Length: 247
Ligand SMILES: Nc1ncnc2c1ncn2[C@@H]1O[C@H](COP(=O)(O)OP(=O)(O)O)[C@@H](O)[C@H]1O
Ligand SMILES: [Mg+2]
Image 1: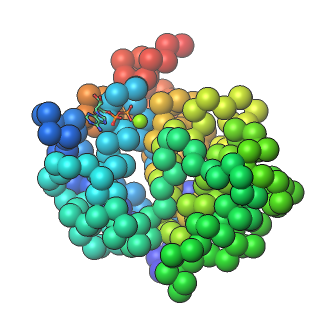
Image 2: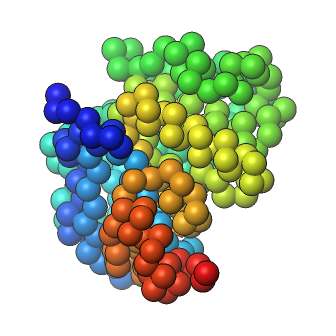
């Protein structure tokens, strides 16, 4: 394994998206997306509502009907794999809608996620619960008793049961109160410290800047900017034009 740099990036390409063009049969939604994530990084894909963020993730997962270009994960071409086949390569996904079973406890929600998984390739439930302070305290609480923030943590925990190396999160802080947003940010950073590579999809650029090292700005299905947190933070034009942030 290559040496880690200060931000955890190892220089090994984990996910590579090249010339991705994708759509739902009514013209292209994504026009020419190039995006690369190295093992150990947190990368954000940030842009306004309707820019094509979810479609990008869903294309990686094999859920978009019309896809061309090349998507590879750990060097394997996953462009034409189905959703299940892609997930089994070691990608975890937390969609925008949090899917927690309200009538099951925290532990039971995780047990359900483990069923059907490849045994050799799953994390232990205790290991996953230990990654989240608030799940440890509430492992016998019902899903329905959990706050929005706790449900988000549980959704992330469920996704990680699969043993994945790459975690893709679609707007994990949407609709959460500011102090819970902080908690979700801290969780993502901690998971990254534990070796999980993250693709964070966000409309909220402040969250992206707080958590990610590298940012791809997407607008109308195209990557219009790529840069580090410092570079993006200082680029008032990009912030203003594509992210609706005016200082
Ligand atoms: N299932 C779908 N069928 C048809 N069009 C879709 C579908 N999902 C998204 N779109 C369209 O694709 C574009 C990008 O949407 P999306 O990827 O959801 O953007 P974002 O996640 O950045 O808000 C939008 O114009 C949206 O209307
Ligand atoms: Mg979306």
